[in-house]
Image 1: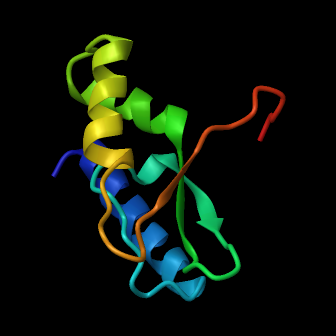
Image 2: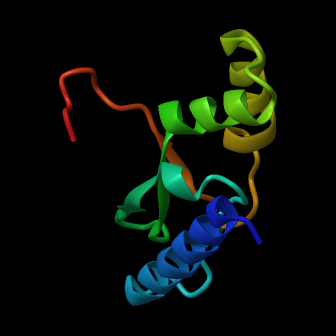
Image 3: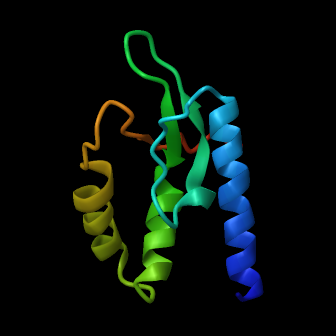
Length: 102
């Protein structure tokens, strides 16, 4: 196993442990998007779910498809990821406000 793959595996284990610590044993984590997780989203009358940074998701998809165009990546993300309903634990995707520096 290469160094990069080992880091990704370690990150996934840490992420899964953190998500469980948040009380989300049934959380849905999308493969290869671990570095785009920014936290959890809590909302009254809805399940607490994993929250992803939308822009980071697009960036990861662009890298995975050998630097496809932004439009191609956006289309893929919208159709295959953000529009996918995978049950009550479906993650949310946050579009950060430009003034946010976190």
